Image (cartoon, rainbow, N blue to C red):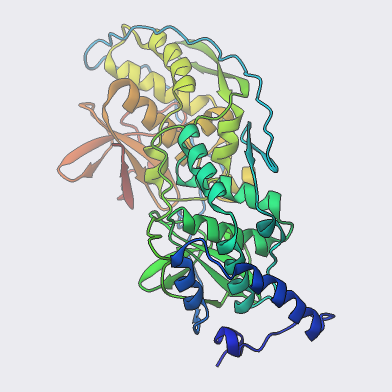
Length: 470
């Protein structure tokens, strides 16, 4: 039915305007002849499979995480002194670590050098890889591209990526960013960038597919987490996401692709950030101020701009990723030292409320769409870095501070248009039930509110979902 997706030997090639049949014949001869010998036996079989009939799939875009727009303005209440409840906090200040000295970066003598979030990384790239093109712009062009890559000296690239990932403690998204940055340095055309990523990520063991939409390449990822506001396709019972189109207003529509996985490529893209990446330090001084009935407070700390730049690349994924992400130790230690000084000797309820008011008042409120032009969930470090934030950003920061400082049970509490937190502590007030336990509301967005005070509009509303910190 779709001739351009037939067998390699039977394909009817659709030539771009201005390209003669003879020029294509010359192109095919040079390209096809360059992959007569594959480096990996699996590629011979997979290359043959790619010539089979591809199928058509319809795109479905996952919804935004919040069903309704978040409030444009936030509420406030009258601040009242916190009641003395619970044991006395006995928490000693820590020695603030010295600012790491910025190291002189070693010169990298390779074909291509990347500035990967502050660190120069070099790659030697085979001439075959540099010169391969996506042509013709159909299934056959994909087969040719794959064949040239499979016969090239790609193994050095795969080895260097693995080595860099180990040294820099990169998670899957960090590996993806490294491959993406390398692809942009080699090619000028987005289709060829996507094909390169597909091949290299497959060799790294990731379950990725390539598809065609209107003669252009779309890279699809099998993801461990839901990626919101992103086109996805259901292939062989599993969802594959077009990550490059996250938050895009354009519709991809029908896509043609294959069903089988590349041999032994079974890894789903995992956005979990269990360990902070080891990026070079580019420190930025931040200053936060807030006031309460107890007085005025100010804290200074340094934060790594390279880490913030990496976090900014994240698509919107499950909130569990953000609530349970590692807190960069250098940032946390500075902030924790300030909090320990203020909390030491207070009753537990006073200490919780101090942290709650710190998060409520240290930042200006602004919705993601207004600040970033799209939905953008922030990691705790990002909330500390940016001057503006909204409800889920503050909930994530507050929850992580409480968990790390006190190890209290804490959950994110999601409504249709708002996110708060709740604590498993013996304090009376507004609460929500999760299983057999009651969690007391602590809303980091409700200005001046103490623990146990919920916004009036949510007092009698059952939350949609909860996110528990591990």
